[in-house]
Length: 410
Ligand code: ATP
Ligand code: MG
Image 1: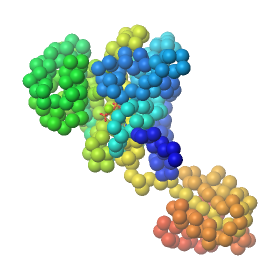
Image 2: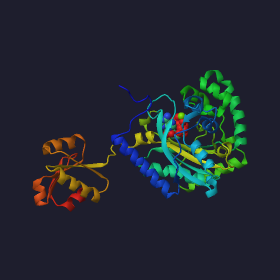
Image 3: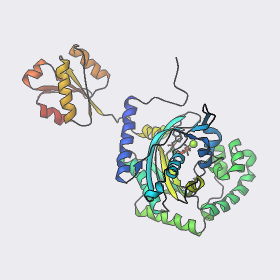
Image 4: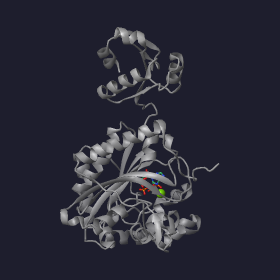
């Protein structure tokens, strides 16, 4: 039997209902905040990611699905969404329509990682970008949207972590100091970190190896190295968060895995054990040089992306849409009733038997499939116009209900 490739999964049943809820919540929120959807290709020229995400990032170094097509073009399945969105922004001259361009996207991403809870090779993100907007007020709105999204889904127990990576000159000064520190323990850290030390020392702080993390606890932190401009933006961001009533925690080791970040970076982290260590569900920051680096204008920008699989894992499994099964001896009568109920009830899934089977069999099926309601619609009910309704989960029966009473109970 051919199986799904390692690190991929089929989404169906209750999971699918949860995914729909996540997507619907995002769409509503983004529409209300004036963000427009953009759909970019799932594969792009490989060069786009090496230039955007960075040659020295883990993603480009060891996680990309890169292949040559039949005309020997090097293509890559997108590992993240920002690069494609920025490419589309430049290619379609979105700047002509006024700035900032406020965009959102959703869809599958691909990274060759070791599959485990909350970490897959095909995973799905929802993300937003504001391109052509200077810090810090748009950053505040972007962060607030992330927080609101989590709240709208009813998720608690998440903490906002923030840090600043400053502008380029602040970062250079900091990296020089960090290199001095890293050099001392270079033999004791993992091979990846030894490479990172040469190529992009900042990335060491993002290492997932616990022993390395212990060493880095004593590393110098970046905030002290922020110049005046960066310091000002950092202060204003924090003041704004306080003013908006958003609780946050400063995390001076937060550097993010991609190379393009500047100034504020942030993550929403959960304390739930369910994700077995993959505890960042939403992450982002400011990227002031990316548009220019990809050949566009000098447009400062900010955005975030969340992982749908990780959010879905956090949503209680109790979330299920209500389902009703019509028990009937006449498929055509059941169909007519289903049609009427579907028009007049919202948020309820209605099923019926399409063949004439014994009503006991229909009831068994409804119970097996975990329907909450069974609505009896046999000749007796049709003649009297009064229904019998059974709550299958609570094993409660309601007899002789008229149609409006049925609607009230559902
Ligand atoms: P991590 O540190 O966990 O590897 P990351 O920093 O590589 O995450 P980002 O590139 O910032 O992640 O992507 C944003 C979000 O996408 C993450 O916070 C996470 O929710 C999700 N995500 C990233 N990689 C994966 C993956 N391989 N499987 C599932 N979700 C993922
Ligand atoms: Mg990663």
